[in-house]
Image (cartoon, rainbow, N blue to C red; front, side, top):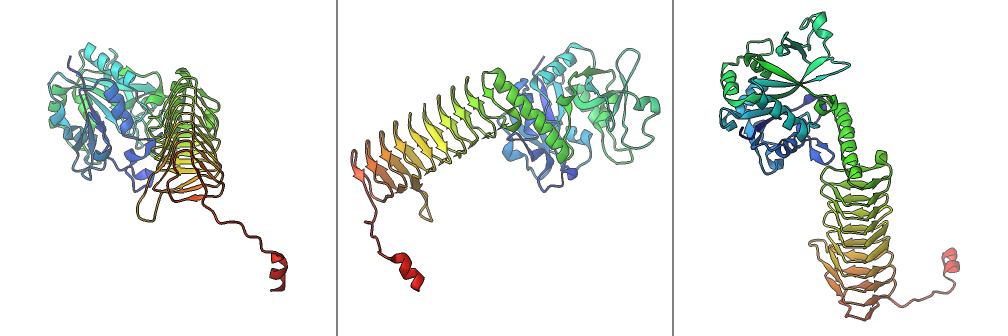
Length: 437
């Protein structure tokens, strides 16, 4: 069988989110909501992933390689949304997986199983179902005597379903597998002859008999997001999945409840993440590191690095093997050399620091002149004393020193001591003179 094609429906605005941002662009653990099913489909080996969005093309800039946008010009329903992707179906025997962009917890394993179940049977449509203790609001699955799906009963309005149908706990999870040829033909027969004037994908499903159910035993995998309450619920489940993945790979997360780790973060074996730490975006941490009460965003830590407490590593911060960023240290767009220490109370921005250097408390790289950013170069084995400001562009050579309280505006040669401060003057009886005034 050819590899499946995944169609992800993501054109809705999600008015219940009460947001100017389209619902499916709201982030979940550092990734836009709609990209969770995109990545699941790519991991499942989909030949192509087609994301159906609105005419504003808001999704296009965030799509990863391997995904493409199809535009649904008007919001005419889920059936019309799938039809907008029909030109991408390919071979008539291809399996088409249809997912929703607001159902982010679906996994590659579930999609693999769904595609395999569809390919192994004689059905032209396979519907993912789940059993819920409280199925309120979901379409109920009514099975025929042979186990196939006789109908899907919607329950949004009073009178849509009988009492017996409302008692059914098996519901439509909104994730489907179709055979491309029959699906394309059924989409052409689809009408909007209903109270809402929309073209429903469920009408297509029932046009493609026989239809078989594919029961998923973990209903959290198919949870949808309609509002910000749902968003928080799904985010918590996604965060737990991320934590468990790292823990099983050999990472200690001391208190998962107080730790935020985005989906694209990588962490090496035997690293310890202490409570109240946030690891954001594509932060990469090596083995045997320790991060304590700190915030890292697009930072890279090599092996054996120590960070925190209360450090802020911003995008472009690179700490090489056994380096340290200590208490109340901020590092941005800087390369900190092997074994180099920035122990406390310092800001290092746009700098290159060699190995084995120690930057004393309150070392500052003044990197912005009001118009442009400039880089500071600090060599290996350098020792800056407390309260040193390095006004970029400036270079401090290997094994050089700076005096406490210095504002360094000129290069310091290798092995030299740079001192740049006024001589101290004591004004006698100053306090008494102020009182007399």
